[in-house]
Amino acid sequence: MKYAALFILSLLFWLLLTFSLTVPNIITGSVASLICSFVFARYYFENVYKFLQPVRYFWFVVYLFIFIWACIWANLDVAYRVLHPAMPIKPGIVKVKTTLRSEFAKTLLANSITMTPGTITVDIIDDYMYIHWIYIRSEDPGVYTEMIFGRFEKYIKRIVE
Image 1 (cartoon, helix red, strand yellow):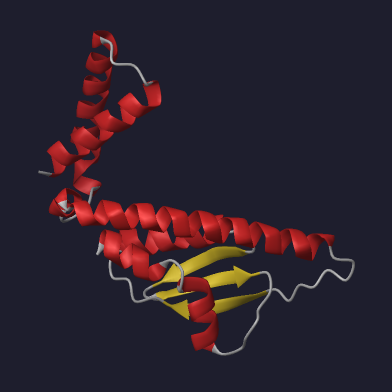
Image 2: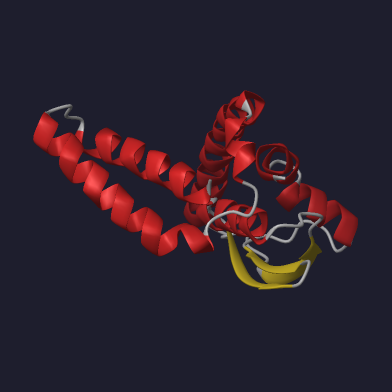
């Protein structure tokens, strides 16, 4: 099942990239997807049946909107800090515990945090993430965990786990 799921996803990605439904393009995409599925399927997800649940796609679309809004807001915040004459920054690294179980979910969360301006994931050790933050607003771990993870973690759980 892993091979078939990866083949279908790879072929769909190929067709989206090339945006052409000609016979040679479909054959080329099929061959490339077949090679990719044989080489990389063993590294793929453990439970492929999750991809067959349409509710996960709904939560993924919701997550995209939340992520785009968070990126826009963070861009404005970083622009304010850069353009402000006093440059109000208080950088530091915070240790945050995640409740996500799968490595893929943790990676998705870490990448979402890193792609949001003003934060970058430095390291992931077990259930803890070390995040560099441009302005540490609180010293309380519960508060900054909610500020960093609150937007993303609950949606990633609904999508992946």
